[in-house]
Image 1 (cartoon, rainbow, N blue to C red):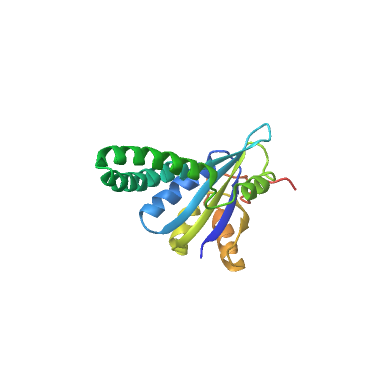
Image 2: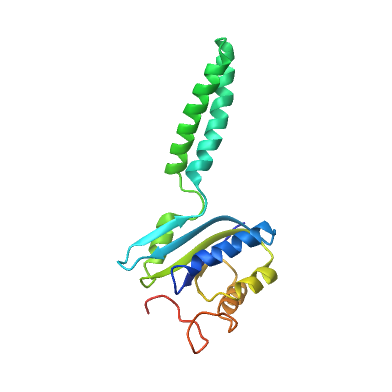
Length: 186
């Protein structure tokens, strides 16, 4: 079962830095996530969601593959498999792209927008849907960032450990007192 973690940051760029670090850790097989989205609250108060997975492109590629396979099979019935292959690929890619655009896999966009309304302008949040994780190693790597856990489906103990790692004094950014200031309205 996947776990959802939403962490707020005091700057727009810090969520991007943490996501880049998580992608590096994923290449090292220390974490495996289904979906990751950065929410940025602009100065005008609007929330932008930046998907890390291009669902439209993935669906188009999958649809093109299936469409070309079925097109070639149907084309063989009419003695023209190359034309069937080409038409099937085009129709499959188009329908796959449309399906990817209309479907919302992973973390619900409305949930992220609603939760991100609590962010101050010029701040960001990172939403991650995690399949597997090596907690000790990942927490150690994340301890150089400073953030505030907004919401999670982790156990209270796991959430406390994550918040402690994100609040550690080894972080280079944050307030002078060494305690994190959550980027939310009180």
